[in-house]
Every structure is written in structure tokens, then in C-alpha cells.
Image (cartoon, rainbow, N blue to C red; front, side, top):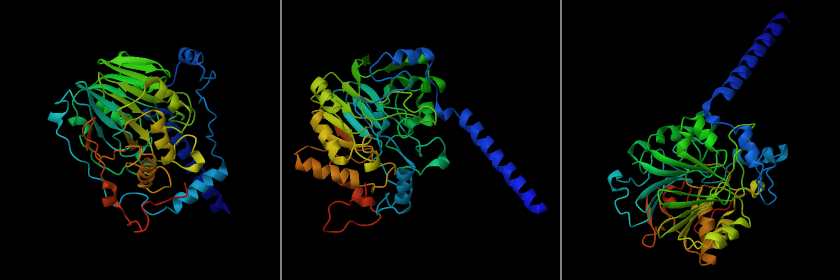
Length: 389
């Protein structure tokens, strides 16, 4: 019995040490970012979408994940569908850094995977949600690697960036390491309310940051940016859910107009945005990482197409896929389902490879490049692989 007591004491000591180490890491790691001040919270609470402690969506949004739902998700992830991820590393099309912004009269859009983009517009360079990290989590051990280990341009190859835009603070959109690596290249940062505190915590000069509420606008480098609603949420830690705002972006250049949906479920805000600011030359529409359990905060592909119609996008591009496995559907399902729905409603859709440029009013790639990366071929009599989501 004595050795059992000694063993239990040793195990208890090791468990306590582990808990202390985790707590120390949790409260000292810079990954989690900064917190809004009391003054900022008082300012937020004057809006119609902040209750004095946190932001909320205009439409009722179910984000509850009780034990039963969590258990279902665990079971689904433990028994994955076919093609849950690519069979091999996705090789992007490489860009020549010297040619960036070489044709200022053209608007060029380059996808870096997931929701990350480089936009060349009116002689300026803009980055949208520039997540260059390999794992969308606060620690490399806490997630699977992205599908592409390299990029069309690595951060050190990028030219100076006029504006960086973030839609919200989740790890697959706002990456600590990417911000640090980009910091010396960026002229200005545009963010939702509250997200500015993360950047300031990470050493970004507050004078180079503009934080906006829904429907507010800012002109940067002669381009108009309008922060619009989305139906989503925020948070990087266990105690900051909904502490910062989330949303979508309207980008108005001298000639061309772009809509970037950010993340979120389908809602009436898309039609309102279309009526206020549409039509758009292109809509970069969230389409991936969905599940019926969280359908209010991530659109199904058919809803992504309807959202593109609502905002009056002349061309739709599905985004938020092609980089990470964050749900239980196959990695190709979002783009395939979206294409079927787009064809049904005669919505034009573009599906560039990572690194393949869209040139507005000129070039809209639409190959099914993802079929080259299938782990298991699709049945010949099926043009879509369905999932349980």
C-alpha cells in the first residue's frame, strides 16, 4: 500500500506541475493578443450590437456546443469521409515579385489559400486576412498543417503593402507569426473594433491602425474601405469570446468594386449590403468548414451562392476552403457543391489555383484543379462527394 500512496503522490505532483505549466503558458503567450480597455468597452456599448460586455449578431445565432454535439463531432472526426484532405502538398503557382503592381490600370486578385488574398488595385497592394502560418491555432501541436507548405510569394518576397485588412480574430484569419513577419512592410492596418488591441500587443504602432464598427468607412491610399456586418463571432482564448467585432469588407477602387465576406452564416445582411453598395465586380464568398451543427456561423455552399446573388456580385469566388481541414466534409466538397448551385442559378464562378491570378474584366480561371489532389477518385456516376454536414 505504501508504494501505491507514493505513486499517487507522484502522479498528483506531475499533474499539478502540468496544470501550472499550462496556466503559465496560457496567461503569458503573446498569441492570444490584447484586451479592450474599459473606455473602449464603454464606446462599444453605445452601439446596437454590444450589450456592455460583448458584441452580438443582429439575427438570432445558435453557437451552443453542448456535450452531445461535441461528442458527435468527435465521432465524425474519428471516422472521416473520403478525401478529408489532399493526397499531397498543394503546389501553388509562383509569382514574380518584380511584376507585382506592374500594371496599375488592372485589378488583380491572387488567392493564397483559405481566405488570404493579395489584391493589386489602383497601383496599391492590399492583403486580406494574410494567414501564412502552417497551423491555425495558438500552438503548432494544437492542429493539423495547412495543405500548401509554400505560397505564391513568401512574406519576405512580398513588396511593401499599402493596406492589410482583417475580417476577425480567429486563428485561421489572424496569425501572430504572420503579423510579426509583415509588420515592417505594412503602411496601414484596417481591422474590426477590438482587434486593434491584438496588433498593438504584438508591437504594431497604433497610429498605423484604424479600427471600424459596422457600416463605418475609411479611405486608405485613395481606396475606400467599408466594414460591413457578418453573422459570426470572435475569440482567441477561453475568456474573450465576442470581445472583438467580426465582419465583411467592401473595397471600392477608382473603377472596380470587391466584396469580401469574411466568415459567417447566411443572413439578411447580404441583401442589405448589396442594396447599399452593389453591384460588385467580384464577391469573395465564404464557402467551407461548415456543418449543420454550426450552420448559423458558416454558410453551406448553396447559401454562399445565394449570398453572392444577394450582394449583387457579377462573379463569385468560393473561399475559406483549400487550406485547412476544420470540419468533417471532404476538402473538395465546398467548391463542388457551390459550382452545382452556381450553374443552377446561372451565377458565374471562378476557381483559380492558389497563386493563379484573377484579372477583373479579363481573366477568370475555372479549372477543376483540385481533382489532381484527390486521395480517392470520385465515382464516375457522381459529380459531388457528399458528407454528413
